[in-house]
Figure 1 (cartoon, helix red, strand yellow):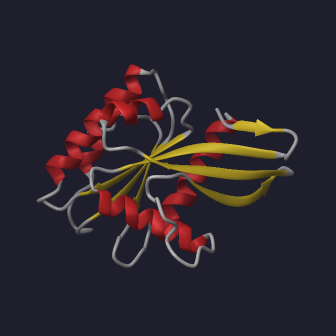
Figure 2 (tube, rainbow, N blue to C red):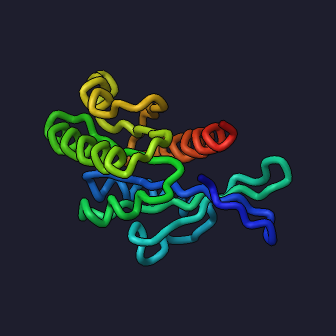
Length: 174
């Protein structure tokens, strides 16, 4: 459930970015930091939160607090508490698919164990001709959005953030 601060007229959404590949997580946070006007990549990222503001909705400022998921499964499960949207950054190249499948399974189990039902956005990297289905089959959720992305060019990264924001707003609306 988003947090509402009446004093500042701000609605904040917690968005967790998860990936078995640290390089993909870093690429996402670098692109978002650049879009937010940082001249250089802030020290500590992707190990610190990053706020992405989308303007106002119904007179309230909307902030999406992007949290990088830690590598440790227990720490990642703890971070999921209070999450509004989960972004899974997946790589479907043949050499990476097994790790992504295991990670997706672990993520789903952590969400189910805490009875968390939130929108999931899957950012797909790798050859666009390879099927998304093996990864998506492990994410047995009702609300899944997929976005094709390329970490080298940054294509699809901001589209992923916008898809996560839209999913969060729609879920909050009910």
